[in-house]
Image (cartoon, rainbow, N blue to C red):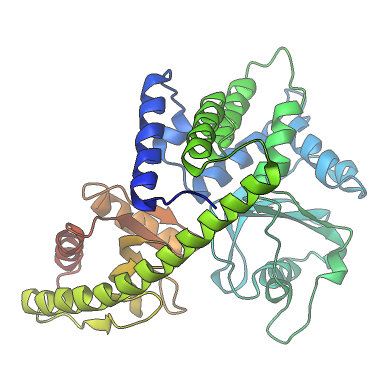
Length: 396
């Protein structure tokens, strides 16, 4: 049995240790990381790398990508003068993250899930049928699914259209699951780049590789911190050289923490219900002419907010604040996931000038949300500041 442990104190000690170790290590700067790249930014970077070509028009990176991940197809031989774009709109406003094509020859879909974006209903099926409408038959379409890790694959729903037909078997030979951690990062690290490169390709790939290594904790600094953290936990949990005993101690500790988390989550949900109800009452007093929506008592993602019309859309978007006790986050912003909402790209351009002065907002195209995080003590004030800006902009 492990000794009696105060897990809250232990967690705080681990955080303090890691902060101290990080402070004492050399400062590491990466421009992609500093900018706070979201899924769209990752798509643009990868698309730029794949668009690289020599003076004589040889698309070296795209062909290398195809050679590595579509080995058993003839796609590489078809590539001549590809067009590489991001956020390509197909049927019903659906957008392909990275779209590579040559009319009449082939079309490649790269579906980016590096930030674990929520899978949209019938997502791959919609893309396939959208390209059918553009003149490509299924045998000309290739799909690479780009999740964060290899553990994530497209669901059966993503492959199936609204009539229930699944395209999964049709694409057995022209589909590959190419995760950023397990496939793209190793590929970029080992791909031989031109020695006489004058296009900044080498520097771009180097920066992006470093960014991905940071994203997955593969940098030497991260490994050092992990090692020191493991040593500290081994001491606190009473680990020995007996791996079986140490494994059981670790399992027991996690079980205790899960019980603690369950009870804290249940208590936090009750508090969230009360707090959001109080915030709603205050907001209704402050903005009596707004049509408020009360989801404060939801047992999954309690929230409050108000929808707004824009252009010809009655519910173009929703301004909201949510207390997510599942993931232990409080965030507020713009919600765009309903069918009647405006397209995400349009909303991003509309709101960016307004939001950049308020907080550090993330533009999550997969989840169709524009959000910023808040502490419990500042959540209402930040939400109200956002509401004021939006209401003033739209003259409510």
